Length: 389
Ligand code: AMP
Image (cartoon, rainbow, N blue to C red; front, side):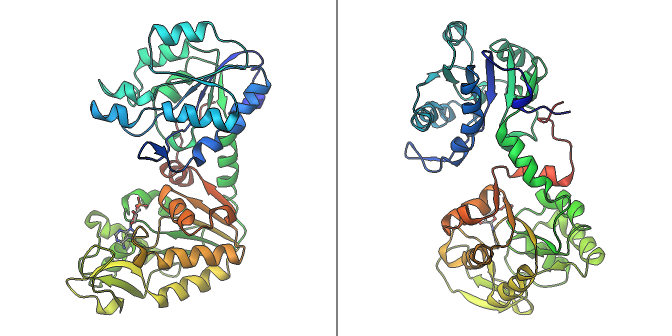
């Protein structure tokens, strides 16, 4: 049985909490602190139990020297400190004397955040390859390990699986909440529909295979739709295509003919840009030089009619290039339709979440998951390494 932090004796103990502070930063400012806020519940719970709290997280990717400065976690310690109204002591190293001294002398209710775990990736990818010596070193810092980083739960890293294999461990309250909501999709209220967008078919193969038998409709938009349209025999011009998965799409279209709903019209441009010669075209009329960047108005209506009748929706991936204002309409319209009509919807994945924020509706959505790949892999039914008994 996987234990939660509430089922472990943590009073007065030194607790390592693996958080997900992988937040977007622009011009030295955190532009979305959702993930930091989501970590507060577990941290506060441990504070109330008089723990000494050692926080760890990754931030971005560290491949070369110049990635270090860009992905410095100090800014997160400052933000966290403001949110908790309490000092969060930042240790600017991932191992070493300063860290060891500080940890040795910690008092109850003290919080420290150590530098980005992926600084250890610079030489030999020690964090991402779950280096045994690094995991052992980190585990020696604490007495209990709590994993609350949902978005990396599908990865075997030193800062999650590695530490957990040396210490009594459990999951935090964020991961618990994420799993409870995603588990609602195991026996969803019907009609149940899944909306998939975004550009990569490859990432969604598992989820399509696993969820297609359970759904009433599988609604496909975004760049993904073009691989399905191509598999269905349509010309897609210069629209994005995942050549390797055309045959998979064909197979799915044959197997789930009644369930898969594709766009019937497309908003095209003559370039992959926001501005240009923008047209609405039926899928039978797409020409060689067209880029399909959003679905068209007839498709939006069709999708709306399906959503209208549903009781549960899971949605991953935008229906168009929502980063361009001219091509965010379908995603925007349907997100607003869902919230206005209070349709129980779970959103999973960074891009659809960003689109919901852009549309100003994210707070009205039934549940927004902090995981992208992790959410998809959980829904695929895969065993997630970060979920250890
Ligand atoms: P994914 O990571 O597969 O969920 O893809 C998300 C990305 O898909 C976003 O950055 C969107 O801009 C992009 N996207 C959505 N629709 C299209 C499209 N029609 N053509 C190209 N990219 C798209």
